[in-house]
Image (cartoon, rainbow, N blue to C red; front, side, top):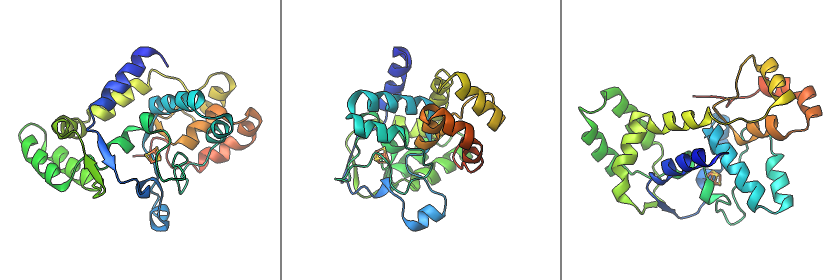
Amino acid sequence: MNKSIKRDLQALYDGVPATRCAGSGECCQLTPEEFDNHYATMFPLYRVEYLNIVEHVEREMPAERRDALLAHTEERPRRCPFLGADQGCTIYSVRPLICRTYGAMNPRSIQRESVHMVGQLPDRWIRDFSRREGAMVCPRVAVLEPEKVRLHAQRTADGTYERELTRLSLQVDIAGGERRTLFQRVSGRRNWPTRWSWGGYNAVRFAPLQWLRAQFKSYWKSSELADAG
Ligand code: SF4
């Protein structure tokens, strides 16, 4: 991934208020009910974020752990593959936006920022913002940079995060050659999903070609998360 894409991604991440989490690991694994209701950890994961994490895994992880993570093709694991034995995140510095923003707002700040945005953004956007953020409140997360909350709320509500991550994702590639043509033929799409899962992207980038030739059709057919809303 080139330096300017990396820089823009980091700049976006830096706008999210830093938080301190009690480290229970609860939001990084699914309860049986959540699993049955099609929830997923670490989703949406944008293509550019996936590649950023791959670079980190290839650079920082011991070979055995690295190989296991890159061979992981499960779309909706019950436990995020990056959750450590101590319930901490093992890729904290490169975790995706969805993990950074979890718990970054609380009921008071959601209410305050919703009121502040009235007249600046369409009411429907503000209602959607309030509903989405309300579902991401966590009493075990403390916000360490309250001065960033207003900008963060604005970017969440007006779609800046989504737009910017999409823009950056469209500039990076997952794989070429037969992997690409196989994906195009099976999926009927010209390009890779902009948002998918760690397992999904791994399947098309790292799974042995022989496996892809034999299995990708059924893998794709049962995929739930490729560009899911
Ligand atoms: S990437 Fe880290 S913070 Fe995000 S779900 Fe996985 S373990 Fe949790």
